[in-house]
Length: 158
Image (cartoon, rainbow, N blue to C red; front, side, top):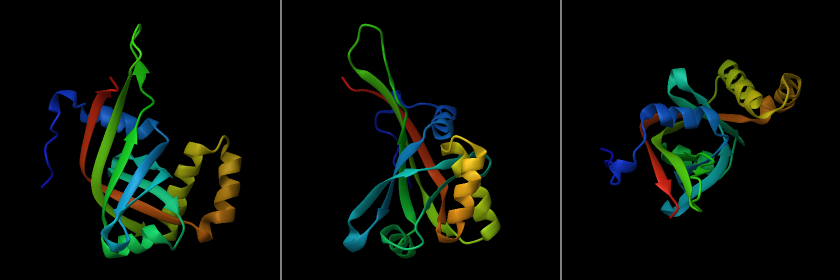
């Protein structure tokens, strides 16, 4: 169903992909938007490795909610900060591309748990995370992406 990676010699292991999902902070989330146009937005996310799922938050209505109501197939892309080899100018960056199905999480207990984990990843203190959680939980939608296919690739910008 999914194409094999064309540049297979640049493929990284599944464990390297999971490491990037655990450690990185920002990603691009893509849906099939209005009139069939792709719609991609930058997001903050939380990777729940034990569930093989990505969680992120957003508004309870809008373009991505409407798009997901029509088609739940999504693409999620994340990349690391990269590195340079000594004496070289080019960056080496590893990216992870995920294809999956996204859904809205409507269970309050799950929403609170995932929103808390998301907040703890980004806020400097647990107190600040709890304060924002208490203030925003009723107007925040949690989204879950069930990972169906994942590939990772190390590329050189040269």
